[in-house]
Length: 414
Image 1 (cartoon, rainbow, N blue to C red):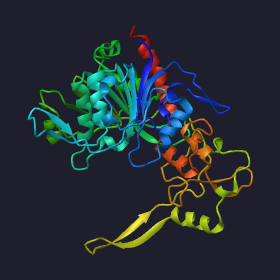
Image 2 (image 1 turned 180 degrees about the vertical axis):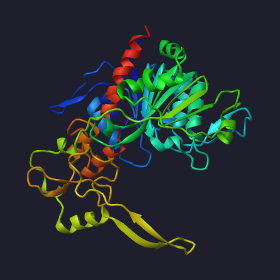
Image 3 (image 1 turned 45 degrees about the vertical axis):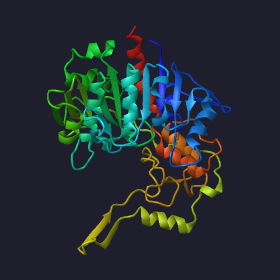
Image 4 (image 1 turned 60 degrees about the vertical axis):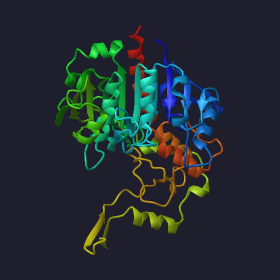
C-alpha cells in the first residue's frame, strides 16, 4: 500500500511536518519521511487574509493545495489516499431528520466533522488520524459523551473501528503541556482491523493499540466503562443523538459498535524543560517588558480573591490561584493559546538567557514549543499572527511518533 496522505484543516502543516520529519535549511524545506501528500485543504472563513494557507504553500508549494471552503469541495475529486489526517474544531455535533426526506440525516450546519464524514463515505481511506481538544469527550454538558458518540457511530456506519487517547505532550518528553485527543480509525477491509478484531479490547487499549506503543501507560486502569452504539441499540444517528450518553475516559476503542474506555496514567518520566527552547542569541528589545508591564503580569498571574455579584444579585468570591511569574524554565511550556504575546494571564514570560531580564517569547520560541523548525511561520506574517498560528497548531512530535507506528501498520497491508 502506498503511503499517500490527504491533509484537512492543514493550518501551517503540522501533520506534514510530523509525518515527514520536516527541516527548514536555508529557507528551503527538506522532507525526510516517506509520506506523499497528494492533497491538502486549508480555509479560514473568518479572515480575508489566508495567512495559514499562504504559509503552507510557501513551504510546500501550491500543487495539490486547496484554499476553498471544504463544504464546497467535490469529495469525489479528492485523490485516493491511504491516510486522512486533520485537526478539526470541537463543535455541536447534534443531528436531525431532514425535512425533505424523513430517511435522510443532517448534521448541524457548518460543523466540519460532517465534511470528514462525507470523505469517509465517498473515498473510504484505509486509515484516519485526527486531533481535537480533549473536551470533545465531555460535550455537550447536558448530555455528556453524545458528540463523541456521534463521531464513533459515524465511523462505524462507514465501516471503521476507532482507537483514541488523550495525550499531554509535556508528559512524554515534548516541549509543551498540551493536552489533546488523538483519534486513529481503520477500515474493516484492512489487515490491521482483522488482526485486532481477534484481541480483547482492554488488551488493545493497554498494550496492543497504536497509542500504547509510542505513549506508554501504566497497566492499572483507574476507571473503566463500556457501551454499545450498534444498530441493535440505536437505529440511526438521530436516535443516538437524542438518547446516547456515556462517560468517556482518556483512552478507549470502538469496534463493531462495542465501546471500551478506561482512565489511564502515563508511564514516562521524560521532561523537556522550557530552558532548552529559549534563544541563546541576542533578542530584539521589543520583546522585553517594561517595569509597568511586568507589574501587570505579576497581578494577572498572582493569587486573587475578588468579591463579585451574580446577575441575580447574589454575592460570591471569585478566586484564582497563583502561577509561576516568570515561567519555570525547568518545566515544559504551558499550553500555548492563540492570544500568546498579549498582556494576559496565559501569556508566557521568561528570563532572557543573555540579559536575565524578563521578556515575552519570540515567534521562533513559540515554533520550538510546538516542534516546528525555526522561522517556519516567517512568511510575511506579523509576530502576533505567527503566535496565533502556533496557538492553533498541534505538537509535531506526537504526529512524528504516531507516524512511525502507522508506517509499520501500512507496510503489513501488502
